[in-house]
Image: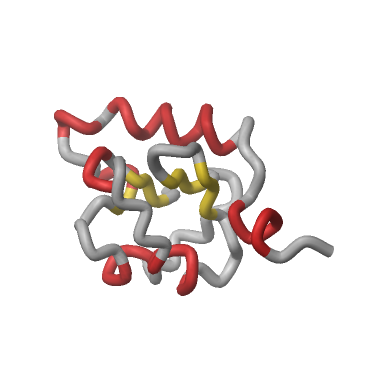
Length: 89
């Protein structure tokens, strides 16, 4: 199961999670970051790196934030990868 970035990320976007992600599956949607579920390898490196505790394994997303499972999927498929934007070829 992939990891999901939830509501506490909104307005924060610390990017510590991006720095530790070994597969660069973190995407920027403007007000928050999202994890691309097809690229996430479920390593969990992003979880302790998040200073606002916004990242959960998909199966552990708290009920009030379950909508973020689908939001991560939708947004990640339509956004440019954060790493690609910051490291142009």
